[in-house]
Amino acid sequence: MSAMTVTTHRVSRFGFVNAYLVEEDDGLTLVDTLLTGSAARILAAAEALGAPIRRIALTHAHVDHVGSLDALRHELPEAEVMISARDAAFLAGDKSLREGEEGKLRGGYPERRTRPTRTLASGERVGSLEVVGSPGHTPGHVALLDTRDRVLYCGDALSTLGGVATSAKPNWPVPFPGIATWNRPLALESARALRALEPSALAPGHGKVVEDPGAAMDRAIAAAK
Image (cartoon, rainbow, N blue to C red; front, side):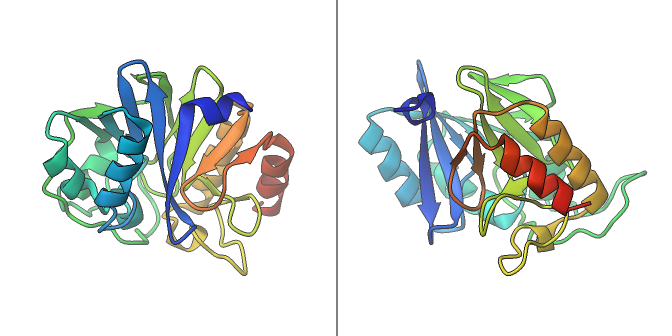
């Protein structure tokens, strides 16, 4: 059994939209919340593990990652809720671009009642997870690297649907999440930065977890140039 399977548990909708429950000494960190209507599935998975959800960390503000946030917040009023300061604005309904941001917002950015209890910046920790800024798919996208086993929760910076791919361009015939990317050159730059972390496994927002992903990440980056 790999170290990855000891600490992380994938929760999926339709087999290709993912959230993750990451084990910590005090309970669980939930990475992303799936589509609207997924709260019961996530809570059941946590119950099966016999541990409470202490933290909700969001990689970005697209609807398939924050869809069940409000429902989970209702059920877990004591849990921390975290997202980057930049993407927190989208949750509050502000879809304007900031000075210096180039590109067109793509994908669904739903307004949510829930406000973060904390905003995330590169180098900070969420339990055992290190925050890694990875903008491009959205302006404030972040990834999370488990400092214990180096599993990389990459959100939509990369996907594994139809093979490992960056979000810098659609990966046909399975184009998600590339078609929803805001700034493709920046997304490619972020993919390179994530590859440099030498992750032991890639845990994406879409697709299966891939162990020893280095060579596949290299091919994906080369294909997106």
